[in-house]
Image (cartoon, rainbow, N blue to C red; front, side, top):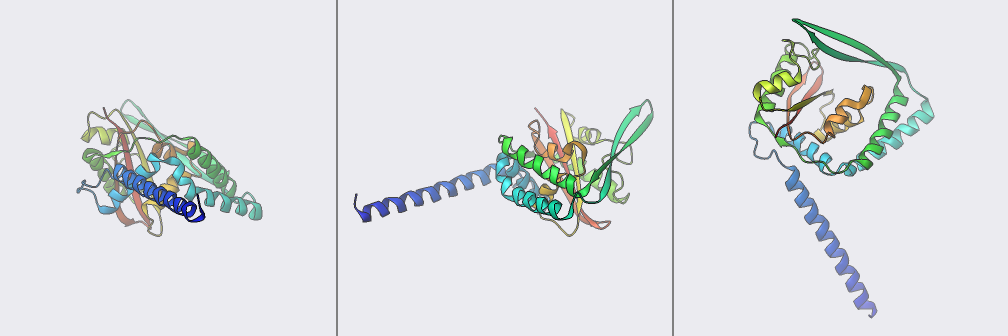
Length: 248
């Protein structure tokens, strides 16, 4: 093989590689774009489902966003130490007869250390997690998410996951989807206005949340369906609700 032939073959190989990667990306986009025809959702809500499906279809692909955050946080802790002592509150609701008992746990941590630990565990989890099934939108789950968001708006977003009527996510979702087998819910709030990817990253990192419950919802293998709802800026933050469900 002469010089010209050798370089021609190399160029041909590169061209086929680029075409393969492009075709794979197109196929992946088609697979993850499950909410395209769900016109009952706002465009940004459909984009959120697409973004969650991109994460689930290839968890390791999210390392390109998370690893730079880890390096940045390592430098922050190196230069500024463990950070300030802060806390988060965990709420547990239990029904006893006609009464609803709310238990509150206080979780103390150092801010820089906590975020660094969260990012390290996330990098490890993304590397180990195999591709998960993409989620399909569900209009009933969407109604449940919307109902809770409107309830939250009427109460300055102080309700967390328990509605003003005492309902939990499973109660609200089963009201509209009686066949649902399991449910989960994420609530996010941030400012300024985030992209869907920024919301997903915030919930994946999940620092300050014991057990990284939001992350576990995003990466749970049991879910089959999803709905996301947002209604813009309320009480100083752009609010999102993500509801998940398992159906036969």
